[in-house]
Length: 141
Image (cartoon, rainbow, N blue to C red):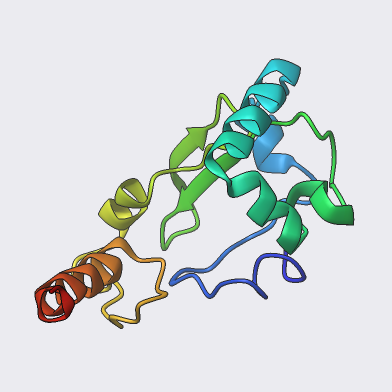
């Protein structure tokens, strides 16, 4: 994960990697050839497959795959006591927990407020978009 994900982005939270699939097993994360194919088709149609391949994600573009390639993604939110507070089990290979759900989990006052244009936090993206829109009228016409 460090080699492929952390070189591409700096998420405003800690990421853990379950290389032994302990959480995947305990929380009954499924494998699905149909989910893999549908996810790949959807990702190809929306352009994200090409971007993922260019970055070497998920075995695309020669990157390694841990475990079964048809294992569906799962995202876990872990509280400050180390307990799993929320689980998202994907039905298709291109799905992950929505950012709104992740941000709702962050305690008030601890959310990212860096306001960088490339920040993954929805609140920062929204603020940056508002600034872009307010200045956009200057450049039209």
